[in-house]
Image 1 (spheres, each protein chain N blue to C red):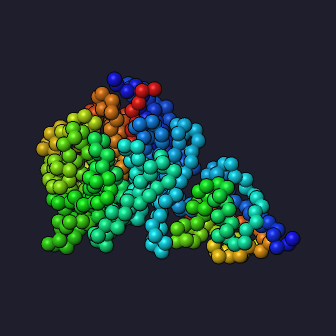
Image 2 (spheres, rainbow over the protein chains, first blue to last red; image 1 turned 30 degrees about the horizontal axis):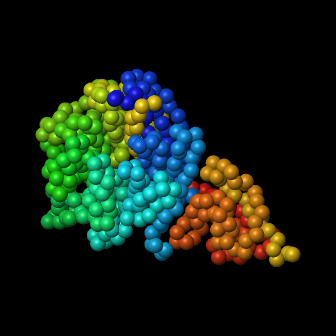
Image 3 (cartoon, each protein chain N blue to C red; image 1 turned 30 degrees about the vertical axis):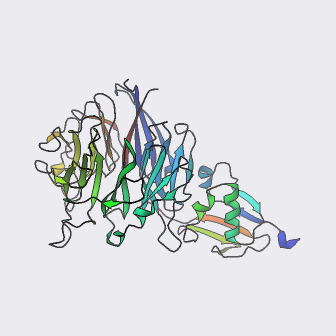
Length: 360
Length: 92
């Protein structure tokens, strides 16, 4: 049965916001800012029960996972267990969250992964990743050395992928007991000649699992757009036909494994805004073989960026697509990117967009 | 006895939002800043983590003043001490 309501969850530099609509997605309510206006890098709802979780870090008070079980009326915050050993660099912020199979995962800066089995009240490290033998080869990207994507397999509680800047993609299929690097075929163009396809050190920006259960992943990297058809064991460039090889988010369609959405920017050293100032989502319906620009309702003369976690699809039919711009504009499409409307302007810089579709 | 006179603790203004149930001003008996934070954490779980990091040390942009002098976790608290927990200027 089709969900009757959708929430767009917006994490920003100054708190979290919720936009809510019925399935028509013509009329939206707005509430927030939440989380005491902390920088919220990622804001999600547990698909199982709608509990809200915010990933943040505050310059005064450190990292925390915020939680609300009453749709934002009241909040708690915890960093219990979000720690490396005494003497190591402390955790400054939580950057990513995932709720799957009854567990809450938290990705942090400096890059590491933690898991909660008590609904976000306390966390334990996944040491196989945090102490990975390749860790000395990890380097900070522009936002620090952050673990910014956690992609669980909805069909297998023991499998997930994470994305770290700049270390690359890592994978576990034994519930986190071991992690392996999954970067073969992705480039590190910023490395010296002859060292541009290392095992680790790539600057992944966006990572999305396609539906269908066949291990198809899409990746937006600092250096190219990629698809994997085997759970990340091998990656293939899909950037031919796109305006650049640079961008941040990658979004998979909720039901069609062939459909992917990207928001290419002009380049890493060219200002990081849409090429020619023409804002456009680029979509492919054949897994990256060919691309079309979606521009209707998106602005010209646009010099904003869209950050790594700041684009998402909903699960309605047709799928909605939401873009959070660095200038605080939120764009929404109720027709799979065919056309967009401006849902909000003048929000703080948007860090992340997620959706929650539910009967209510 | 003077030795067990409580210290007077003022919490940061931002704690009104972070810990709505905690008063701004309270009296506690604690022998050091570290002991004080442990007592605050026992009453309001999570409060220590907002004030101190896992180094362990007082967070970089938080200051704790004991009788007017900036303290550390090891700073002893004389009976009746005035303790201010304040946020430093930071942000953008």
